[in-house]
Image 1 (cartoon, rainbow, N blue to C red):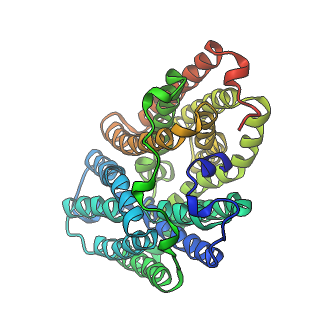
Image 2 (image 1 turned 60 degrees about the vertical axis):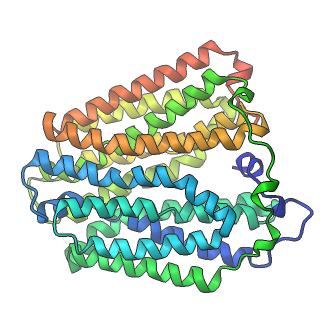
Image 3 (image 1 turned 120 degrees about the vertical axis):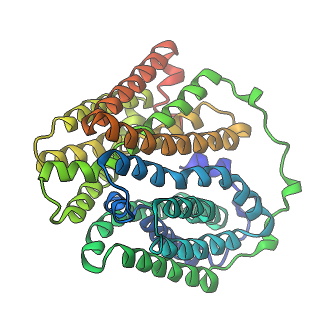
Length: 423
């Protein structure tokens, strides 16, 4: 994180210059806003298929397909508009982008509770992605304002808030509908984000005069400056594979839980716990995997963890009861935790400073590609070939990724590719 932060550092935040007097308060607001935004983005995971059924869609094939489409729709518009919001933030201020994201999310998430059919739900999910981006905007703001000596710590705190939102969302999504109903859950989510909007408007302070105009930026880097293009392309492909492996099974988890339990009683609650188990496993393993990658090399860690993930995915297709499935989902989170930061670190260590920002931007786009493809393929395969086919197909994809990482590791010198102590 340190290397990535320094590569994208704003001139106004460089060492030796006065630090922003409100950076700690802005960090606290950014953590809270990111937490609520991520809750809103993941809240509907446990009950999305149930809501689609409530909107009039019938048949497992259609329900699972629509679940995949509506869930991934947000990532389509988010991936397309993220660069636009970034440029507007440079021009009009980063606080304005946070205000726009929080207000827009509050309105649209509430409106989802008023949807009358699956097409309206799809349209609103597209708008959520269009107006979202609070956590990424908060990351840019914190990176620009936090002093150099505490920047990594500040970004780590923000990252913790984001991960906590990823866990709390499915948990609340499993509990709230049983207490207040699905539609009221969306209204409550919108109200929660509106609190983040108010905090952003009245508490975040930004000194726009301290930032240089966009015209003062250095000449744009070129793809020709990338010294090891095959490695970079392979890591971008790895980002796609990791996101597909992570998200392809999410639209069908609730349906699978219902098949394993044989009952709809407490289905949302059980599904929410299953979703949270995977995220909890990733939080636990991420620091340990990072330290392991620093010791033995990042590509070997990618190979080992992807292989373990493939095995666990295959076993999930054979799970005989909900307890076994829950344990396997937790183990899956352990295997995948920290892999995306490892890919990013591998990219960063192989790039000169002048192209780091550009290539890492490509990496973000690659992640969005996986976020879109994964749920769509998972929902389609689950509806037409059976739920176990989703786990088997994703396991094969993870094995392909492991084989690719191993091939890259073998084809380069150990000193250049292990990258164990160069970040």
